[in-house]
Image (cartoon, rainbow, N blue to C red; front, side, top):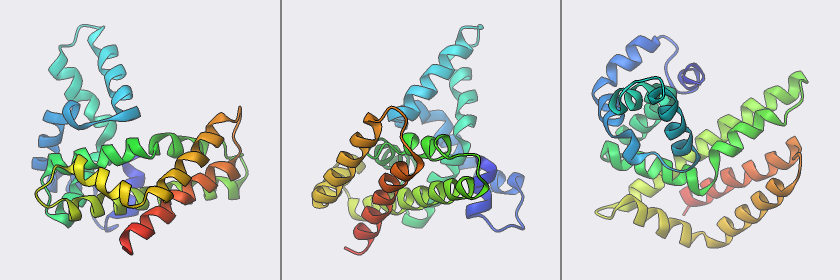
Length: 206
C-alpha cells in the first residue's frame, strides 16, 4: 500500500527512503499518538494487531509503535495534507480518520478489489476506483481543515457534513443497500464509491 501511495503522490525520482527521511519528525509525532487519533475500522484493526503482538510478550508501547508501520501510507498522506493546509499534524490525523469512518472508506477500498473479477480490465478499474476514493478522501479532509479555523476538527467535520446533508444521506442509503447484499457486485460498489467523489467535488466547489 505504501508503494502504491508513493507512485500516486510523489515525484518518481524520489526513493521511499528519501520520502520517509523528509517526514521523520511528523511520522514520530503520529506514531507516538496514533492510538489517540485513529478511528473506525482502522482503529479496530490497529487494536486487534496490537493485541496479537502483546500476546507473545511485547509491551504496549512497543506493540503500538510497531503496528503503526501497517498504516505508513496513511500517515504519509496525513503529513502531505498537513503541509498543504498548514494544520497541526494531530488535528489533520483526527480529521482524516473521522472522514474515513464517516464514509466507511476502508470498506469501500477493500471491496473495490474484493468484488472485482480476475479480468484484467476489471482489476484495473478497481485500482482506478481506489485511487478516486483516496483523492476524494483527501479533498474532503482539506476542506474540513480549511474551514475549521479555531474550531476542533470534529466540529468542522460535523458542520461540513450538515451543509451537504442531502448528499451524505444519499451516499449512506446507497451504502446500506450495497452492504445488505450477500455478495455485492463490482458495479454496485463502484456506484457508492462514485458518490464519495461527487460529494468531494461539491464540497470543493462550494
